[in-house]
Image 1: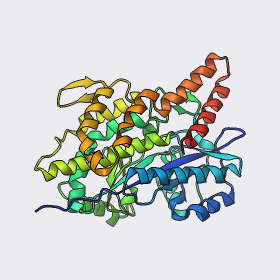
Image 2: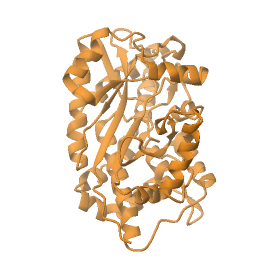
Image 3: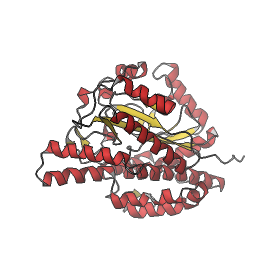
Length: 378
């Protein structure tokens, strides 16, 4: 039985850190009227996060990534303007270069208090931010079929998004240290496979009926069927400092999802590899980003990421044409030319150390760069 083509509408969520412009450190207690001012301006598109130093935004349901870019630019601009009135600024980075997680305060909300009680020390270290891309797949069975195939590409997306090289004032050597922290939570990492949507629902029901989780929002896999929307939610990526990088990655997610549907429509499908193997690429992307390549399991060898990206873009170009995002998809190559946010942060830090700045001053310069780049190009 054929399935109607999905709408492939898209939505993007981003989490930001709020820094004090004077100290460049995170604000530990957000001003009481900051969130209310944001909500008055942006309504349901903005919300508090687990820690008071975090804020989350989400686009409307968008037909194209062009629409999503315009909406996200507006959201970043508004948050920056309102925060600036309190001598604060948002940074789109998955970790702060030198902040101490032990100094942060949780948001006064029962949902977050419940998380803190349940997860204890694991939750208290969650000084990290991410970027989530939703793609609408109306049919549940098709949604779970594509959900089973998409994990192959998750490391390829992560490799372009790294923005968390520093943790508590030290260079971790990783492009995405955020995942090291996040993976300490339960129900994270690459998702399992399910034979049907009903099997997925039974698995979730097993945990909800006995009270282990209240609903599927407490499942934090790198990719998941959204609990609130008829979408697949890609969650593996760091939040990208440059807006154009976010949009390039979102275009890849949207096009890859449509490509897998297109294969199914033509009685084909993407080969599924064991999660053990995909996890190796996940680690490589987490550690090196795109600089050391990823494994092509079909060829059985390490391939330079630039070559893999070219192959992927060629593969999904028909989908980019159908979804009106050719330019946005092609801009993924610009990330390789300019470097990721993690590359940018290290460049600033190393140049200031070379100029005999102290490590603290160099890290403050990194924060300044992140403040600027978060709102550039809006």
